[in-house]
Each structure stands twice: as C-alpha cells, then as structure tokens.
Image (cartoon, rainbow, N blue to C red; front, side):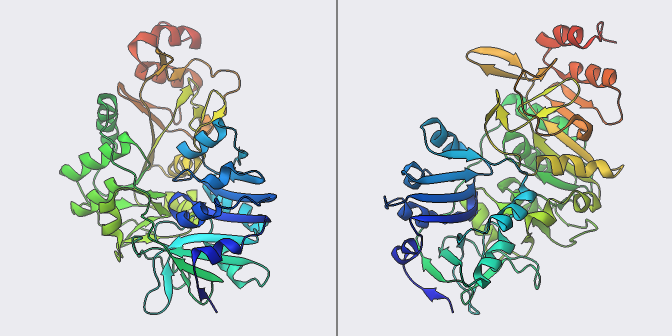
Length: 432
C-alpha cells in the first residue's frame, strides 16, 4: 500500500551506500534530487540517470558517483568542475536492459498527481524506465519513490499494456512538490538553419510520417509545414516538441500511418509551457516505452517515414559524429542511429541528417564536412546507415552510392571555401 509522505521522508529512504536510478530529463524528480543534495553522509551512492535539467548539489558531494546515459549542459558543467561523473555508451533503447540488469535498490520518478482512481500519469517521460519502475514496485527489497506536481501534465499511454502510469498502491512513498517541468524554449533559427529546413522540406510530401529532434532546423521544418499547403501527416518521434504541437494545432496531423493509427507516438516530451498545457489530458499524443518507439522495424512500418536529425561533423564516406566534440562527450547517442537506420528498410522512407556546413572553433571557421575525421573521433552512426545529408547548400543523397559518388555529393554541399580542398583529399578533383 503506497504511503503519501513528505520529501524529507523520501530522502531518508536512501542509504549512505546505495544505488539510485532516475529517468531521462523530464522524468527526473527535481525536488527529490535537490533535497538529497542537502545530505553529506554518502559513502558510496551510485546514481544512474540521463540529461539532467538542473544543477544538483548532490552530484558535487563526496561519495556520490553519477553515471549518465546522455550529457546535457549540466553534465558537461559537472564533468568540467571535477564531479565524479562518467558517460555510459548505449543508445536509448538499450538502457531498458541496462537498468534491468543494474536493478537499483531505489528508483524515483516524476509524475502528475493521482487521478480519481489513484493512477499517477508518468507525464513527460516513458523512456527506458517504465518496466523497471513496475518491477521495483513489486520487489520487497526495493524502494520506489514518486514525486508528483500539479504543474506536470497528465498524459496517456496505450492501455491496458502500456498505461503510462503508476498506481498509488504500487509505490512505497509518494509526495507532492511545487516543481515546474523543465522548459525548453523555442530558439530562433539562424539563416543557415532556415536554408537547411527549406531543403529538408522538399523531402516531405502529403501523408508523410515525421520524426524530429531538438534544435533550430526541426523547429523550422515544423513551422514551414504548419504554415504550408500540405497535410495528412503522421508523427512517430522519440521526442515530442513544441513544433510538433504547432503542426497538430494547424490541423495538419491525421496520423493515418499504418501503425499506431489515430494518434502521435512519442517516448518523452520537452518544450514550452504552452506545450505542456496542450498535452494535459490530450489523447492525440500517446507516450510509449522507448523500445517500442525507437524500434527500427516499427519506425519503418510507418507510411512514408521521414526522419530529421542533426550531426556535429561527418567525413566524405558518410561516417557521422553526433555526440562528441574532439573525442569528449557532448550529448548522447539517444535514438540517432535508430531513426537513421529505420527508414533505410523501406524504399519510400527517407532519413535526413541536417547540419550547417561550417562551425567556428576558437575564432576560426572550419568545415563540418571533413576529408577524414581527426584521430580520436567517435562515430555515432556508421556510413552504411546514412541516406541524405542536408546543409544550407543543398542535399547529398548517399544511399546506394559508391564511395567516390558519396564524396562528390558531399563536396557539393560543403561550404564553397572548402570544396576544392575536400575534393583533392577525396581524389575526386576536378569536380564533375
């Protein structure tokens, strides 16, 4: 029988030597972690999570070790200031078996307040932890803590198998806080991102099913589609964004996808307060575990799937670096490879990797398309998975092309200042 308690009681449930797991980003119980940081008696507390949405004193404490599956600004800050933090390489889907094997003694989650039947919606995050939350709840030797806030939207899954909720009777202790969900503001796209989005839009026709990630390009693509003449779109996306909400509100989403028809599918959401208000009680969007949403076969089963993802750099063979900078962890693997590889299983599907042609490093403009990757570079997505690369100078279609043809296509969409050098490095000079 679940007990309604206080955050102080929840914090006392964690031992000085213990294992704790929390979900990714929007699933993090913020008040719980902040109040854990008030303690200084930890001797060996191991915390497993991903994409912190705030700076928590807990991870600066002696005796606390944090293992993250996805770095954000908070993780990078903690690493650079000497905290005991390490990256766990795995894509989002594989964190489900990882956390099952880890079997942390304590798990904690954020949720919406209980409804009339006692169910607490898991709100903005399903991800890789749903099944383990239920296993934790059923085990006598484990502890499940849930932090509920009235500011978190009550979202839905696909019952009965995937209800996207915990019942108050399952948990060991639940408490209420006044925490607001993490806000991811819309960022005005740069000129290059607008140009990239305009190129990407050419690959999206009426009836396409869409996946978009974070950043200026996917936001701009959603804006162009919402304001454009097309429609009859579907949504099957690891992350549900403010841009996808605007597409819904414009009446452009019918979700006649061929799989999960009638509603958009996602595994977590992050965006503006307007998005969270719109999601509250909205059955047009369903939250499902990441092993379903990010399955390449399920992705490919959608009608005319088009996926839009980013990269930091790539070489002329199409090898993609998307989560590290100079070999240091910058973000995470997430669903990048799944949403690049899935569309490759069907002729009519397309996968777009979008990036500006250049970056400025220490005041020097450098090409993001490289003749060869620097020593120590870490590949996020292999060359054989890549379909289309889009820069502000156009689209390079790589699927089915030879190594020479790939290089020529990528040189053509590189910044003009670097094309001759890249062509010579690739041995495709002169450019046809």
